[in-house]
Image (cartoon, rainbow, N blue to C red; front, side):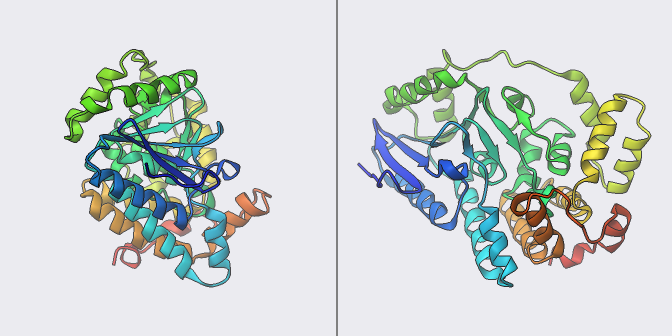
Length: 356
């Protein structure tokens, strides 16, 4: 038995051949810091080495969220002190953990119950099953604070989502809820929250029969959980068609905004998305689209390398500090972006300054 104290930020224990990794900062929506990242990484290493551990489950304590992402306020404070080192250390270790999850050799199930955003999605992205509930809210809202959808999202969104949704989700920070998370590709399965205990018990009950190979193990897990997994996921073909039409393959933020202004289908939706984009940091939106095009067909290792370069580029810039101030600290919701317009941001953006 591998166990940490109940007041630790991550609780780890193995039971019935299943390693449980529990994020335990419910007062902070289980947001991540470096200490938590290291505990999770060690738990995965231990689980992989242990012959008697057949699978792992990652979930959060409390009912409000699985993980709201990285502790951005702590990162912003280090930047405000003119010290980028702590912020970059966090990103380096966070991205290394996310990449570790992508290569984890045993089946890993994430119970994404409640808020699952930013770094929370980074933890889920490399797992074999991501289970959403009616309480789940998933988003990559980083452009609102002058940052970009990191944790590999500008690469793995293309492997998971229907056409147009990688760009749509990354640029707008759109929040998917409940079973919609499965439809757009951010989650793999949907289960009512009151049946999550059955999911855990089902995995534990059948753990000894889980194949060591990841793909075969995932299929066995799905078969074991078939009685609780909801297969009838509502479709939304009109929304899918709109997203595909306006976002798929976009190379220019200015062209996107112009098309949204001139849109002839779903005009109310176009206006809402245009207004939403207008609230974001122009520099962050322009960089995000460049990252999407840069990472679309790259190996996941290269995607995380590009993320580190982009994080280093944006973390010390005005818009990140200003976005965190306006949206997370002072909460006046009135960031003053520099540059203020998408025309200026597009003209000033130099990819060679990021992708070195």
